[in-house]
Amino acid sequence: MAAIAWIGLGHMGAPMSAHLVAAGHDVRGFDLDRDALAAASAQGVRAAESIAEAVDGAEAVFTSLPRNEHVRQVYDATAGIWSTASPGALLLDTSTVDVETSRWCHAESAARGFRFVDAPISGGIPGAIAGSLTFMLGGTADAVAAATPLVEPMAGHVFDLGGPALGIAAKLANNVMLFASLLGVAEGAQLAASLGLDPQRFFEVASVSSGDSWPLRTWYPAPGVVPTSPANRNYDATFATALAEKDLSFALAAAEASGLRMPVSGIALEQFRQLIAEGHGGKDASLVAKFPSPDGTV
Ligand code: NAD
Image 1: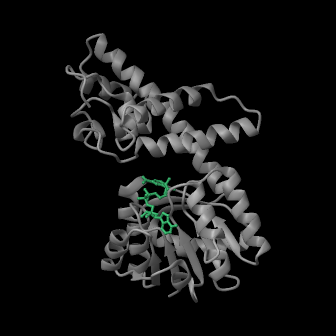
Image 2 (image 1 turned 60 degrees about the horizontal axis):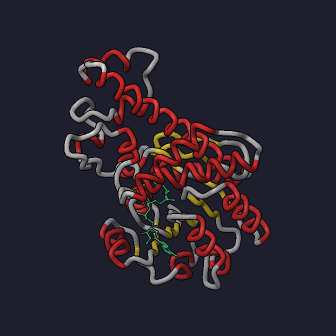
């Protein structure tokens, strides 16, 4: 059993920290949102009133925060993790941040005597609830070795990617592939329908042919074809459009810094930004592949 702190008990942090409690760890959590804190506390997380109280005596500190600026602030604030955590504590960030922020967390943690692991996740809210997330770990070999048994109660797969910020690199590169595939599925599905193919029948063909992909099997955009598709549930988010926009913008920034062109991702990013501008940032990212409805509503 380990003493663990968890900062950020939202859609992902709450179910993930509950798995650590179920595995027998003593988990103390903090969230600015009182309702989120109360919900996590009902799952066995001990509620703290501040970051300092949560991390006091903790051997490991997890963060699950919305964006770069929240992660930077939670680490670097006057009463943040770096100034209040126990010397030598293992710090694990499961948030999706950009490569620059992840590298900064590694460098600044090391300068203060902490081991830091970038530990982004794939699998969404259903994976967090089921404890079947894919963890992509980046850090020094000893930090990743220490992190691995701690993330296992939340994980279906755990990968050591071999160095600082390489977990985030894997997460962003994976999502570049996901969203490029999604746009391809969108266009193929629309073409099939417009040429008179039955969506269910066409899905049966594509899913055993070279058009097969994860978004095809999970997010097929016509209602009633695959049970997991957000198209069946008015595009309620399993992976929100706002998060897709964030991940792709980080991937494109990393590509630009490396002198790499990613025109397909640029088009996908534009599509997500348009959906957000139309007020659909909270809807599922697969809305980008939506079949037109007769009245034009979502
Ligand atoms: P969320 O907004 O539901 O949860 C974040 C929580 O952090 C909120 O409860 C918020 O109150 C809290 N918070 C913000 N600032 C804080 C501070 N200074 N101190 C304490 N708490 C603070 O977000 P989420 O969906 O749980 O996602 C968390 C991270 O995981 C994000 O980086 C996201 O990109 C990543 N992620 C999400 C999914 C998903 O499907 N939701 C999948 C993979 C990765």
